[in-house]
Length: 152
Image 1 (cartoon, rainbow, N blue to C red):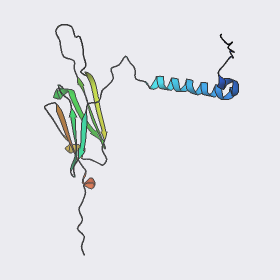
Image 2: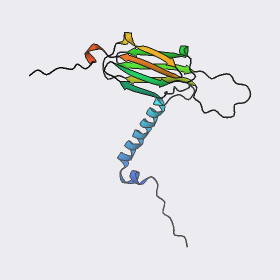
Image 3: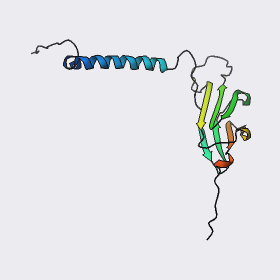
């Protein structure tokens, strides 16, 4: 035996609180428009972030970034204020035959790090060996720890 179903127009929230329901609808519509405008365009390739380690010594910050297969001329390292910015491109290589499966990343990459203290931008040193980019960023003089002897 099937019981009769009662259908009411509108949602429960709309029936109980009509002004609030309209405000929620407007809010969700505005959020959807915001998210659509903030979302990346799928027509442009997105940049990926390489794996990296950031370490600190008394003298400098050191970033080791994994960039296997990327040529030196395809990498850019910039320091501005306290921000380290590494960008570049891993170009897709020429292939013969049909590519059946691809899981390796290609295209633009970007790594950013905000360093905790002021640095000497003019003394930054970068090397690329065995697919690892190593960037040494010396600390500014004021940022280095000073040991003070206690007299007594």
